[in-house]
Length: 336
Image 1: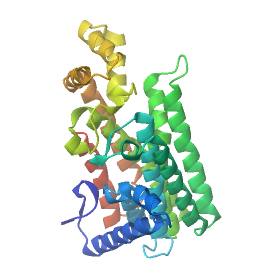
Image 2: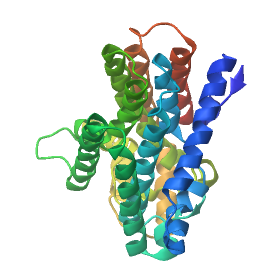
Image 3: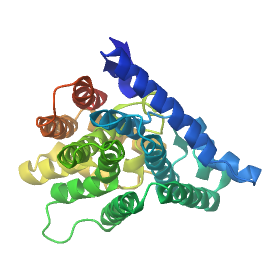
Image 4: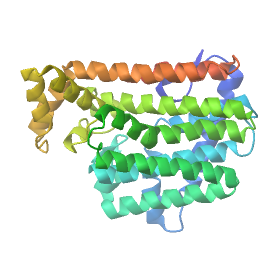
């Protein structure tokens, strides 16, 4: 058993490990090439998060999904570069919206160069991803465009909040399906599609990716509360400080409304107050870390990870399928 990719994913087959490692190495080269510009400052800004590292979760999924067809097909690596460039671009924009100071253990682009540079750098990465897509054919362009529309819609829905009478938890899960699930699903879709896998296999892997993406984001919600900056690579409580109600907060609100317990209501009121003060943010984090709502959010993560695992049932038994199933466990493990 060897280790490859994010979360220490173990791969039991040496040939599969070699394919995945070679593919990820090629993606890394592709990312550096795609983020070069004739303007040195643009190169520096565009490569800021590339060089900071990251899990390369989406390219890994492309490589594993490609195992169900021809993993050496010419479109596999470029499509993995596209999804990672798109993901990186959203991080630049997210950090501006969240006023985040840290990303992947380094200063965020907006903290280092200001919001305008961060937004424009994200746009530059989107442009480079589109350039690569143009060589992958109209179907790839259509798939990416639909996913990008869903991603932006999810972000807008999060900003707008649920409509009157809509269950906030259901609304939030719709947000995550668009904001995170869409691009993870496309990662699996591209890997299978570019490898020439059967259309039914493409559909199965796309459904798996959608559910895994939601589980992945739910795990991030838990990490934002439960981890320190060394573990997560970003400042804990960023979402709390910005007033973003992630799953642990929504589960707290749900419990406070249902049971009416004084301690739940007090914590809810603290979370709804101004958390720009570091001491108040620390108090809010400490309260959530000890609250049953955090454990409920962990159970939500497990539920979506198990749905992702179940979605793989129609696929033939092979090492790539085992690795995809293990990713479900790895995502749950991140949430504790």
